[in-house]
Image (cartoon, rainbow, N blue to C red; front, side, top):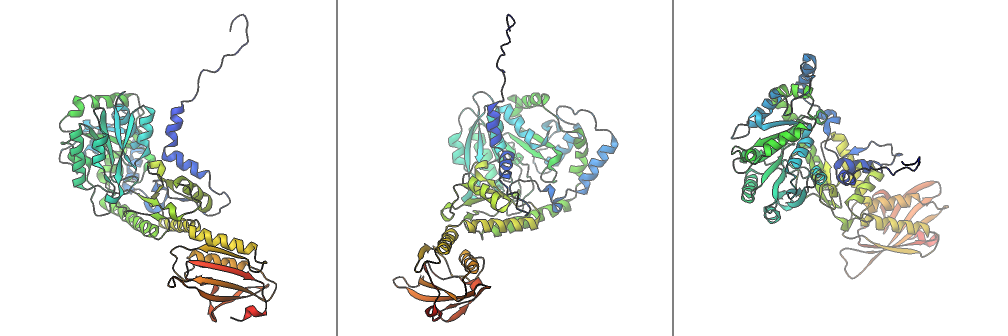
Length: 543
């Protein structure tokens, strides 16, 4: 200010808009948004089928060995100081020994960098590779944090497809087509998040050979390592480190069911020393020098956690997840409008495709998830969040009773929004609004409907509910229906239906061609149904 002026300058700061964009594509951001649409008047518990954190459920408690290891680390009073940049040496040694069990080449503690969960490991390697001209190849669908971190440090992203018709294998032809002289790395996630797949040994070898051909390293996200329960066993990508350099990312979070402990690692599988020669190893160290370190308390417990956990704990967790996966897959296959291309074999997720052609009033996967949250208090992650529009990612690693309830609600939602159910419902609304007008009628179609006495069938349920809600002052209500039967292509089969009802009681019975039918299980076997309301009179009693 000059000459006593009181004029104020504008504030010279603002939030970074790029962080807003990056946050919007994270799973946390999308799930938080969906929760704002929950119906607060719905007394039912919210079913969380969108987030991979089973630790909240009693059937997924961590091992007693892990709990005791933490307690012992606390009582020892040895782990209260800052951690070294790379992590405590005993923790790094324990991780090296744990991973080396499945590898042809033994890992050195010098190859291990301790991180704050696997998320910091992702952030570290993405930042290290973010040269001004570099690009990275990410799977689609994939884990959105890779893209979010790449965007925040201006690393170009290119996407290759995972192929659902081939159990979500990498489209290696697409990888070769996308890569150029500036491509630094490709990411694979195995076992798969979000797809629930497990890559075979043969396919991983082809991935390594393709990467070697292109001169790029492989970032292997193995946070769900060993959580495999299908036909393919888990094979770590580090097995192929002699073919092409591999950076392995992992953590305690998933296999030990402790995501809140925030203990992860970044490990170099490179027996040929290529990454060290090109400065990548040194750059990782420099980045961690300016980053946070994982709590020394958790690092102090790592040797016992990794070295003493019994196999029966892992088997119990795997069996629980496998049963949940089977239940989820079978339940989804019975739901109209969603298609599951392959049975989940690993991790805690499955991808299902929306068939919008049989759903009405649903624009896309995000609209589906918003309305599902509103109407059924079920949270599911829209596929667009993981790079695949009009798909859904479901987690099945929750309490079995909650999973069963969630699948039932999902089924009810899809049936309610199916074109068949909505057309029937609209017809009944029209009839209800015009029931006092003799001869009023409305036509609707039920494509590919098969007759069923099951109350789950939307036509029987909706028609039954509609009839039971009608109130007439005494006498009887007659419905005159023309049915075009499936087996009669050119003709019609005319039937008269009499519904006995009075003002004091619900429907007593339905007569179709002089045969009594339970109105609560009545489903007309027809593609086209024409209904006319008539004023009840004496003639309507004769069928």
